[in-house]
Length: 265
Image 1 (spheres, rainbow, N blue to C red):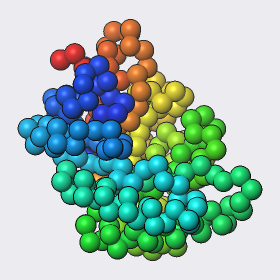
Image 2: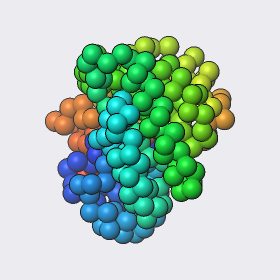
Image 3: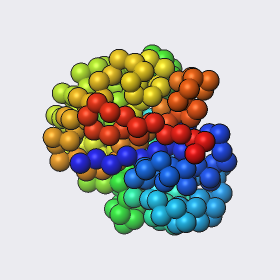
């Protein structure tokens, strides 16, 4: 059965970044996560997670380097080495990975091959560190125009080509609803290649229950698989002025009930 991780980049933004860790703990989260570490006080994050006794589920270790260009391979390897040292310090076993913007005029098969080459180059580092990389497709219709990897199907193809146990897909339910739909069938057919989930409702990337997604059924389907890792809660505020929604935060409990996180507690 999956566990819930709160993305403190999007939730509890009313308080300082490091203080969001204790907020996530108070709200009942199983873990927390964030994006890049370059703009973070890593020592402060480390102290806060220890004080709260809350695991770090995921972070970005080598973001910002376009994997669609094989010329970036060496730079990517060096960035991953540094990022894995931070992950080790924070006891984080999963690192998030994007691939960069599509390069105009370069065949997609060339860019696809470059991603495979770059991922293969860091695979030994991940294995040595005991860390799993999760590759993230993003939607290009609403939020990330020009991003190369939008379809989960190509993400799964890349992972099968890389063929390494420390590489999985980050299946973002919000992004893939916009891109391709057919969520439950896709998830269950490829669950062995999924290492992390993100969730939010469509449209707007808001709290579950504000849009078109039936999260009760989605989680029922996930729970019927062997998946036992994290689901990252990564939505944004629906209406800060509406009573009961002082914060962009909801922790889901399986079924039809959802518990709101009150950032002001």
